[in-house]
Length: 199
Image (cartoon, rainbow, N blue to C red; front, side, top):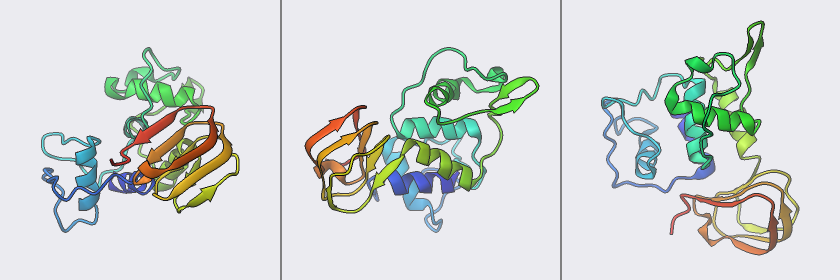
């Protein structure tokens, strides 16, 4: 779980929040992920369950769908999913699973019983990276002026970026320190979404 949040932190760059106390019983200041959880708490991304967050426990598929959708502001979709094991998916995650499935970001496993989501299965770090990259298809993480058209979603997570005379065929996410991004004659087919971009 901690590694998944670390990957999200690298892309979305939640603002550091040294003032936000880590209140989990299983996270201490000596842990490499302590600062990450400080930022996640301040952003409202993580809440304790009976005081614990289980940072070293493998992330399940339904947890990944829940956190990934929340991180990229993807709203849940009501109603049942198309998966044969829909009844095994937690109510707290089902709407996000359905939303990501309809967007083609997460898929199931083909079986004789139909397509299964297997919500309680653990995911590997490599699998998490692949799915996150399906959402954040293109990433700008260095200052400069950019003018090449972009196919799919674009994420900007640094300051000092200018987009000029270009088209983004998906959503444009401004995150981290990207609040000063300049858009000059930019056409966005999707939505302009600001994620924890500071002031």
